[in-house]
Image: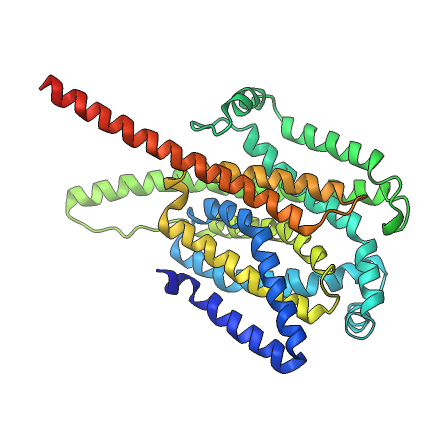
Length: 374
């Protein structure tokens, strides 16, 4: 199970590290390894949330997520994205921006740093919407009941999450973005525009995903009825699973979600190196493990066995959204960001273990009572 799920990740790790050492020497070997660990530590919550979506998709789309999705994650977000940011912010052509990344690394890093408020606002708002929609949604299980139950009742108010997100963006724009010395001065307009773009992206992609998920549920109900009828008539019907438009938009949602999670990793990587190919290689290796871990969680049914893990991951998303918005003005070390996410997930895992233990003890007690009555 481990080798089947993580085999490609292990292979890419060995190949990547060997290539880095052969191409650029032992310094590159060490930096690529460090960046891989950084990406994994920052993105564990990403894997947990991804697993919640991926488990709804059939085997074909899970393979697409691990193949095409990895190409998008590695080459798109870890290589093309930083160059595109520089091209847009510095008003350069893509070839000029790539040339700058290769031949003038300090100037390239400067442009990316100046673009950070826009990146943070976009990613922060997208992730904040994920967290708020989770928090305001009514569900059977509550991890922090004292907080989640009253908020779930408030969530019955239409568009409450959007209103809270816009208020948060307004506050961030009026406080954090007005004086950003190390990012080029007043960035209020930039932050507001990028934040609204992040919100719109979430509403479009998330809305389409939700729409096709609803359609999918209707199709699954019809399919279940067809299977029952076929069984009664002695015929066999193959299960279709999540496919078609529903799976495509779920896949698209996963890619945008991964992109938002990767913002802090890409920006944080500049604290370690400004060499774009070292960065893409290291973060790409980390992205492979995140995807393999996502599939592992799905195949093992971990989210079903540890019911609060998804809660912890969403709280980590909320924390990351806040961190991204705060970094519009203040620098926060990546270690702190990673520790916050890991701590919340570990806490939710421990709560899940305690819950399972109590359930087991309760079941044993019921059995004992039944035996006494008999």
